[in-house]
Amino acid sequence: EDSALMVSEKPKKLAARSGVQTENSVARVTIDGAAEYYDNFTGAWNAAQGHTAEILLLKDVVTSSSQGLEINDNASDITLEMNEGVTLSGRTWYGIIRVNAGKFTLNSGTISSESGHGIQIKGGEFILNGGIVSAPAGKTYRGVDVENGGTFIMNGGEVTAGQYGVYCQNSAV
Image 1 (cartoon, rainbow, N blue to C red):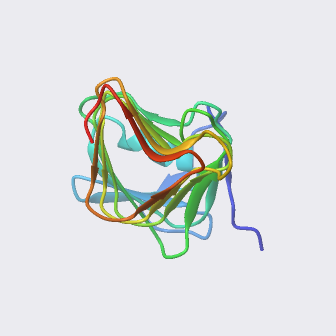
Image 2 (image 1 turned 90 degrees about the horizontal axis):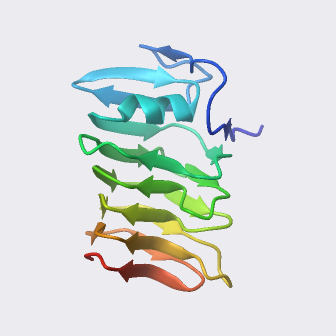
């Protein structure tokens, strides 16, 4: 059974959410101790914006957003964990996750870009405590692309890519 989910850039309907996990749940978001389960990863990601939030990815997700999943709010402090063996992947030049403001932390799981950077930081902060961030081999893509005042802190985990595992320009690593 294929458990991958296509996540659209702009969902056409409100993501189903519930206080209890169902067979359709792909993510759990916890904000201020309250947990909600989402059937759509974009809905879960958007719910975490502007908050200190923990997202647990329950199943593989393939994003279909060409721009990636973004953090644009300085109040955002999002921590992502994944069940064992779970991957967040997709095709995007800019990064599966783009941190333009706020803070993003990866504690476990795999973020894998099929055609572009794994994670791009432009102005925000990314902390890698565990897990894997990868971009395609044999290409000019970067596992972690840090530009324009972004900050990358690597406490653990792994970064792989075709050109640079970590690329830094006008930023801090």
